[in-house]
Length: 161
Image (cartoon, rainbow, N blue to C red; front, side, top):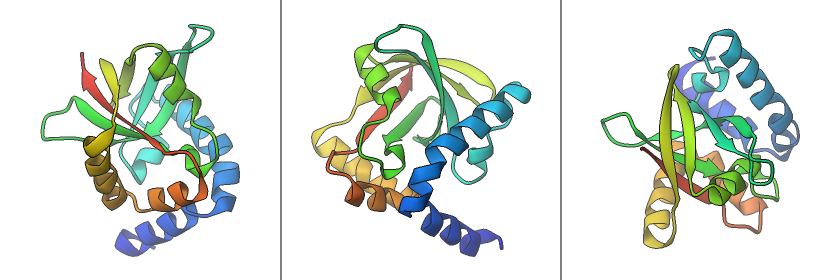
């Protein structure tokens, strides 16, 4: 199964509660392992969605925390990405979002094997609404994730420093 049909199947599966139960424990572990083994050249989840690896100091410990994430590249020039703090539709905000907020948005992303210093901005108001609509068009399962949680899913724009 390939192409649009395969993409719809993956979207349907990733919208389920069952996926939300196991994916947070399986997908990042596999992504980190493959990313490390290929020296940053391959991110498994990026076969379906663009992906990057975010490194930001922990909010409490200050130790670097590395998280593979799906992203929505913005614009024609590399250097701006949208991150969606969906946490696979689970109740709490993902830890990486709290780390970004605690550290003033300073982080590093590994994009296609290159480390790039970035600054993250939490999107709010009309800008958030506009970007949320773009995110839903980009990956429709985000709508199912939002319906399952009471919190507003955080959106961040990352830009090169």
